[in-house]
Length: 563
Ligand code: C2E
Ligand code: MG
Ligand code: MG
Image 1 (cartoon, rainbow, N blue to C red):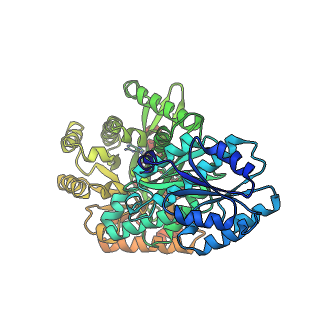
Image 2: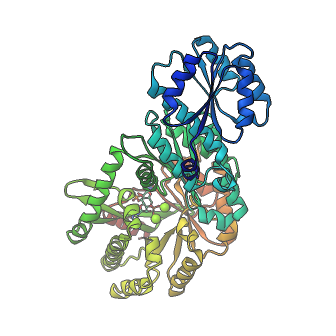
Image 3: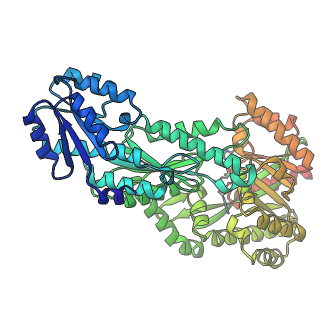
């Protein structure tokens, strides 16, 4: 590690200048921190370098000198395998010479006269830092797979940059792969390794253009400590694009959290906050970037508030269950065939809150069961009421969360629901989102098989948004496939999406399951789906989710058509 090595020895600096007064001035500035040796011209300097090959940290090199100039020294060093890795800081009074010196491989330059000791100390320190970082990194300090630093080395290095280079302002960036274990499980470890390597190389390429360091922080998480970037979305897109190039068939989603530099915040805390930001956008494929700051703190406060308000909300009926109809479209006119129960929260102070704002939150902290229970009970009660009022049976599907699936009491809860309301297992259907199948797959499949054995119909929700592969599909027990909205959205504009929709319809036919297309909003979308054999449609084209009173009007219409 940098630290322990540095404690063992002081770094050695070679000052090369033909004027004694310059050597003395620089020596005085640096001698408290470094051991100093000197040379009067290029020839002497090269000799000193050979003599101190193993412990020379940096050369401070004047350009204009008798016998052998600094330019010639740089030229010689560049060609020498051993010397070329020693960093050189050029000392110059001529502005014009700087550029050529940098082009010849100098790491930095300092202008004469040496009247800003702190600046010189900082620049020397930084150059040594960066070059020692580079040189001292043995294979043990590099992650074998990605070539980035290891986590420990990275933290050590970041801490040093933070402590000794207060003139530099570094941001903390964390990148994570969504459901990486699933990618591994479905596509093999070799493919998983390719993904990690690809991200590593995209980050390395980015770091050639900017000051910074990076590591693989954990299995599927990366950390970058870099100077402020103008556009983090562009950085995320750039890395995501590289990953997209790996395979056409597999979609890998990255997410990013950033904690910008702020005074006095050390790297450990800064990375904790960047990681918290990154976790905030877990599963958010639409907007996978979060910058830690006011917006995030506001969201955290809001999340906390919603969490605190949950109990009262259930007790005081702030939650309402709305129903969105699903229509069979292979008959004329289309026929009301079932519905989906969707939760609505009308908060006394905050007004209408979309399920997208609280369902993932409550799923994350394990309390979604409370909401789902409420929805199931309300739904069962409503289906019973419609049976009694209209002598009309309309199966309604409820959404199951992942935590419901893993609840050992699930079967009993559902059994009681059916029995207490005097329903049959055909009256309530179950929707489970595709991605819930892919985590802990064995367990989930067992539960779902159990529910089907009880007599429930299972609908796979959001099909096409997650990670399921074709060979998994045949193993997954379900009766209805709900095609994700994104396919329908572009039917009118994209031939690829039309082909994909046809493909999904074909697959469903092979598996002998029905298809519900979600998010159907226009006549054209409806016609296309009908012509291509889609069975059912749910979407604004027919109706938005409705308050039960409004939904009754649809039932009444349906009954009057039948008569
Ligand atoms: P989902 O289960 O895929 O539900 C379908 C969502 O699509 C609903 O959003 C519905 O209002 C919306 N939708 C339907 N037709 C259209 C259309 O034509 N255009 C557009 N733009 N949207 C349409 P909603 O109600 O906001 O629910 C969002 C998600 O929240 C649901 O997605 C589901 O994952 C979750 N959710 C809703 N209610 C519950 C619940 O009771 N329990 C659980 N666990 N999750 C729920
Ligand atoms: Mg659903
Ligand atoms: Mg859906």
